[in-house]
Length: 93
Image (tube, rainbow, N blue to C red; front, side):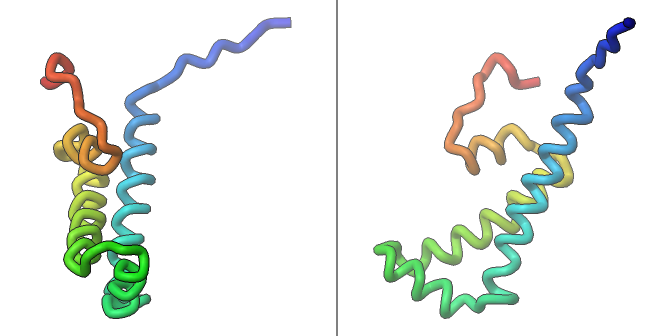
């Protein structure tokens, strides 16, 4: 029986991950003002102890960051903002 070796293609995997996460962040951010309403979201933020401005900041970061991730521009910086990771300086190109 011959075994099949599948070689990983990290370019396609990273593209799929960026597009899926970027789309998720964008849709979650755009859903706040269009579906739920910023007033209700602000009330939820206040109940959890966050200031009102954090609601608007989170919405903008999700929308803009999601679009940047989908377009694959500066994705390392956006990932660092979203996930709280500091990219290594040596990995920058």
